Image 1 (cartoon, rainbow, N blue to C red):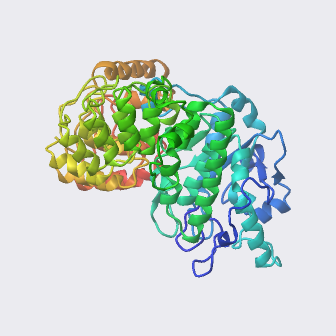
Image 2 (image 1 turned 90 degrees about the vertical axis):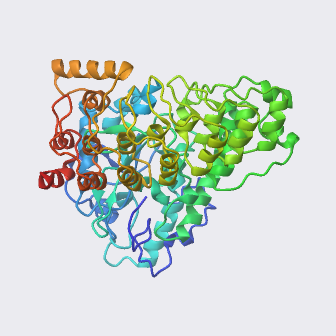
Image 3 (image 1 turned 30 degrees about the horizontal axis):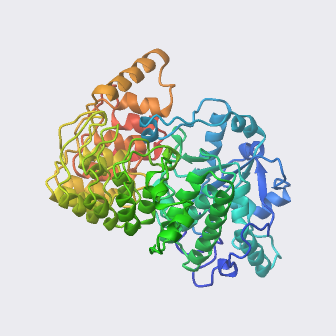
Length: 595
């Protein structure tokens, strides 16, 4: 998952030459065409400075081919230079610091705040903690030969051949890895000066491809993807983040790589579906099978009732309509985008207002509705329109107080909801979000959608309930994974969203904040990142939020719109205090200069 504007994203080859990846046709999927070279974690922890390339580590005897029984971690990252993935050693230094803190127990890896709100608790498995000290790392600069860094006398064609075989072996490398770590801290690219981070990671085709190959591995455990944002913020990936970023839509430095990576992921998906069809669980098979067209960037076409029933393993239309599984016929039809089947299932007394259950590990939380699934999955607006035409409730609420209008992602979806007289202004406990506030934090919601909500007279400065955050807070706190997050923040500010609004949590969120503050008063700031997030919430301004997540572009934008540098939250933090606490030291020069 490499970032460089003038080189092949995997091979570091100049753009005016063909990508080595053109030699890879995907036919070797699952094959072991080149050794999976690993570095012992304990050896990695002793390294320092700029990481050395494959041939140097091989000469030093620090590379070990994978063997059965090895606990291995796949490291995914963007390149921070055109000819070197980490020219200043920033990523590898961060990784070492995090590994040390995990090993000594001073850092907890937790679920994201949304999953936590839905009572989905996850932590690093005890088995992983036990094996980590004697584990190994796969890091491409160490493991794969590079044309820009090879032994003197080694012919370029030999290196090219090795790279091609290694690239085609990536599915096997990912499948054999026990843990997947993505380095997504805000770090500046040496050559382009662009900021790399969570959002740009998910924009890159190779990053998406590596993640997809891991998630589609038959041995993948539910919580085996760790996102390193800083030395203080290390979290499990939000369950839905990978699904909303198809490989086919990713950015590739060399366009020829796209077909290669899509082909590898297509084969991985087909393999996973075959395994699930044979050995189950059936609901997971149905989930992936119904998502297959959208995951591959393909259009779905209805091919008849018998084919639908056979594909999803239903004995009859009635069974598909009345099945109590978390993936019944209606869910399959929604995820396929099959409006014909939706009408037929509804006529067979299928419940169009059913509540989702059992899909939380995939980002569809218990208590959400069928229309919410249609919106969250970004299906054609006709699917949503069909459900509402068939009398699905447009204003039903989830147990967290969210409605389908609060999950909208596109202007087209919004128009359908407006035609159905959806409520675009109310808010409900416990979250207390208006549709605009919520949409600002929805993964995949576009800036155009936020503009359409504003044009529909949604208030950019609404009364604050529940979590106590305004649209501007949400657009910042949940900006990771949003490709146009800076544009969304700018739009809100241009529509006169107050850059100095303090968060005022109430209800359950106020109780969480009080508990976190009390814990800090007793134990100091030693609690988890999630707990500290609750502790800083009362009085949090948008600038505090930007400092907490470490976003330099949003910080600069807020300062341009006269955000108050001297405002403090209830805990007494200034924005630069939160930058220090969250491990976002790259913001300190900006915040200091702005004072």
